[in-house]
Amino acid sequence: MQRNERLIWCLMALSGAITVMVGAYATHGLAARVTAELVHAVETGVRYQAWHTLAIMAVLIGQRVFGFKGWQWPVALWGLGMVGFSGSLYAMAMAGWNVGIVTPIGGALLIAGWLMLAVAVLRSPLLKPLTK
Image (cartoon, rainbow, N blue to C red; front, side, top):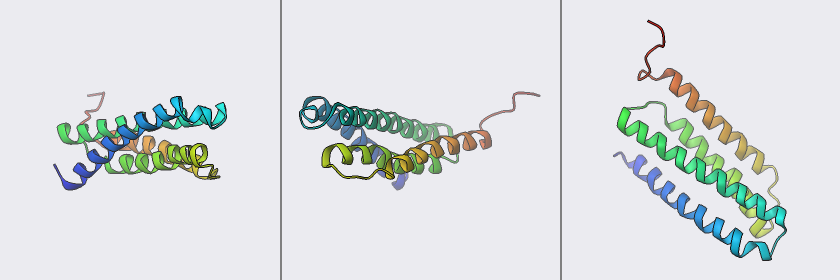
């Protein structure tokens, strides 16, 4: 396993732990401090972070097992998108920071990561043409 892969796996393990901790706090502690709308925003951030953490792990497995190429861009975009999207929702609800423009930029990075994954899959030599 390359050094950068090991780092990404460690970061995704931490991301998974953060999703559980923030989700639990949103359910058991945050609700007493902020509006239901902000709790819902944190829950949305947790959900998006969890799904993208799993997506990054799946891409890393695909890269390792099948030699999938082009994985770096989706992983990088998803990582930045999770920080921007989910992180801004957490900061807004838990710290009261007004980081409004960061949330849609983070969402756009998440979308861009999915689009880059589609491009990488279409370019992958692992896929054989559907026609002969």
